Image (cartoon, rainbow, N blue to C red; front, side, top):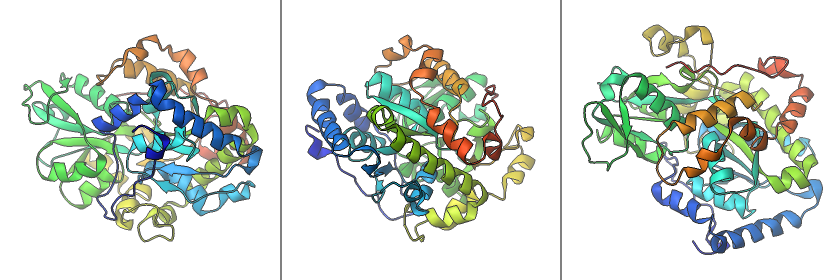
Length: 413
């Protein structure tokens, strides 16, 4: 990738197995963007795109991956909530990988994206892209899915487990679970045989995870839905733990805007956030309609996923059965498999910084050493837009949030 002309959307295949991930090649592509000669054309293109519009004239250009993490952005588009805020929109652009989303975002080809919350750390501080988290996209929504023969975390010893990206809440939570069971995370070639007290971690695109599990090349994977639900419906895997049952109501993906938009176009940024917050509120009470809207059979054909798979995630009616079977350990948390609330709690960002520093990742992670939790919570996140948007729809209580928008992080393996 040498010029901005290499930044383009790549459509995924129209099958229920289709998805996206961040591979080693994608990491190298994103890492290359830190080089001035590579990044400069993209940044100039992005500046030109941004400067060609004034204020609210700038259209909303969504970049997304076809996973349930993108739900608020797609619901806001489908229900014309951006237009209700007086904004223009373009058709959302579906991408195959996180690398392509970020490249298009930097180049200004898209200006509203969802991104893994730990990846947002890496993008701002590792590759120094000037962007801000303005809201959370959803909470929970991920799971550790394993071969049917696996009955405990301890059973993963000597086996291989896949994660979607090193800088993901999935990698963080998986390694916390492994440590609690006295297992050591290692990163070796896929065909390497780990010791009985080791678990070999590999990065796989989510689209490959279900087939890899079915083919017995991995013992499990931890990833966002609907891939866990897909493995369940295909009877090739079972959920061992839900991510939200480890870190209560954790963020997974966040809404990411360019800092040039949050700083230079605050009214536009506010209206974008208003629409996304309204989409989240609607989704919480219309789960089945949301699944229909996002499905391959929906009018927008936003994802390639079948309605039964999306319904198992968004309109879950079987969560009680997971509690009864012991999959859900913390019954008193009263959570949904996936839920939606937009406020980006500072306590979460602070705990995220602490957690990623204790997590094994590949590549140059020296930038993490300099990160101070309190500083990152105030620098990476701009919560003024979410605060106002929440007030406009009735205040924190409509999302079941405390009035003072403060909480204590609960992480229990």
